[in-house]
Image 1 (spheres, rainbow, N blue to C red):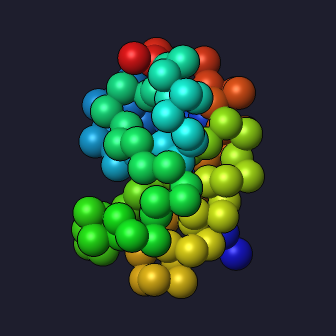
Image 2: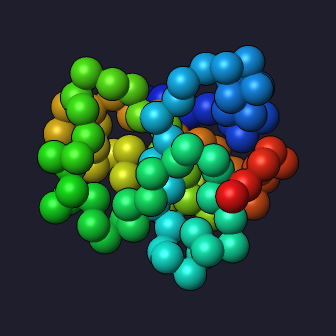
Length: 99
């Protein structure tokens, strides 16, 4: 069962000062329209070759536009032994700040 978190929960955690490891798997042109402050941009297609940038001891929250691509990233990274959670609804439901 895939771990999930809502955009509202992510926003509340950030507002409460939680240090979250967010990874945005959208394409560059999508990220250009706004990314959650502090999120790391790794397009979905680059995840396999960039997993060494991730720390297996840290939990990650995966983000995309609507939650589909981030779910695929979660499935892939879970299989590699990472602690990953999917942000359901993606940026389409994000009401917090972007940069």
